[in-house]
Image (cartoon, rainbow, N blue to C red):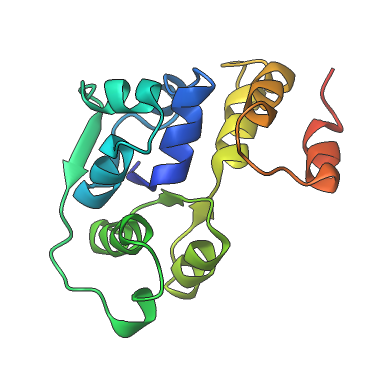
Length: 157
């Protein structure tokens, strides 16, 4: 399976200490160099900068070969390059949270999933306790609408 990730999902999975689920779910995950650079910014949490500074073997940093088209210009560099990379690699999935990025990826035929989808998938496979992971996520700056939270946890014990 080929999976590409944007900045936000990597950031939040590190912050809630669930980043280890990505290789369990998908094996290798690719990120564009722009995503790595965003995670290394001084404005990123220290925990995130430390983690990305010591890349695990399952995380590949890649640079898209093609230049972005005008439709991608409105997105930030990480989202733009993640969509480009996912298209070039014919990725099975792009993990991205940004609404505009998701829409643009879907227009290009790329299957998208967000941080919540990753947590839900990991929870259904018994890789984490979804309620605990979501509670930790709510303690960050991640926005989670009440109706989305209710749907997500509806069938959880």
